Image (cartoon, rainbow, N blue to C red; front, top):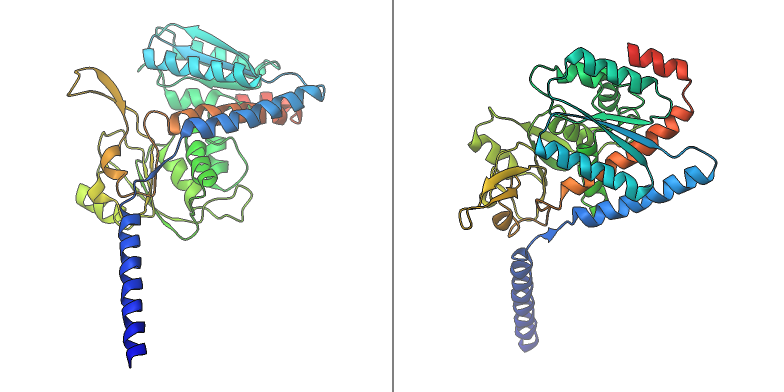
Length: 338
């Protein structure tokens, strides 16, 4: 009998310790995923890939960037891209055009770059002035040179789980999830935002079949948008294993909307005024300080998805160079003019 009482006390003590350990573990802050560190790793891979490619007797990959107008943010983004290109051994050029350029003049420039065998990767920095149709411009870029992955052919191939140029930001999110070891198979995911360049492709990459030519994440994905009531969004995020915030709304995702241990990827980039200093600062779509108390993983803004976007763009440029070597020039001209 005494032995039984001793055993019961030991079990109660062990249970109490387990509870204490569980509670203390659940109160640990999330692991902050360094997009800069992951991007550095990917850029090192890209650099090695470029050097191997050049050593084999191939021409160094070349990226052409068309920048229209004087948008300071666009100029900053383009500078980051060309610096990254130089860092990994890709040659690049920035073609500046005034905001007064006509749509036809811009299309003519793109067609010339499509036909230039020295240009492997081509992107037109968005946004464009209001008088220019962005969709027409994106579709004017040759799909094989479309390192942004915005051409309708590349979007279609992505949706069919086929190999294609993936949009850099969604691909960056996918690499963050994979390289961090966050499981997706059978998991619940919420993507807040349905933009054709970010939200929709992220949802595609996460929900599609992992056995296909372009493997997906096999997750169950819910997409929310501007007409999703906040309470309905909360119902979905409360059961989500992964939340990807890409709506462009500061503090859209708060701690009360996240379940314990969820992974939170913040794609948002919003410039707001700091109430304490009065200076402007960059924030994401997630209440970082609040959510990190409940999440298992979280990306910061800045320093999270942003650096990954640029790194994946370098990967696409190398892919374009290799694809073009295997693609007859006649097909490039035919596809570009279609």
